[in-house]
Length: 149
Image (cartoon, rainbow, N blue to C red):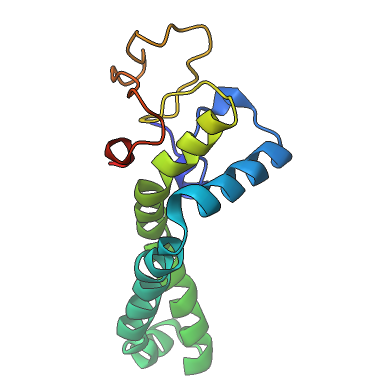
């Protein structure tokens, strides 16, 4: 299992993209594919769950402080850290589900041959053959709305 989605890496690790290539791909994603929807999704998938977890866990601050024998303010800091660690994998997963295909499309727009569905490098594989990693075929138009699902 690949864990790159936890750090927003949506392509095959074998690609070895440079920082400039990643920056260019992000620019294409934001300008061509996501436009205004990225901020609202980020708020719903990343920010809101952390605040909800913190609100729920902060109700236990005094109990945690008594249990650990520390001040309630220090217990609050521990709870905030725990909430971020608890929610981060969920947020990264949701963000990746929303962001992965547009990011891979941007890489294809840059001329990097990879599978839009799984991020596997398709270097040397004919366009009409399915991806050896996920078994899906490339769609006819890289920019079609049907490919975005």
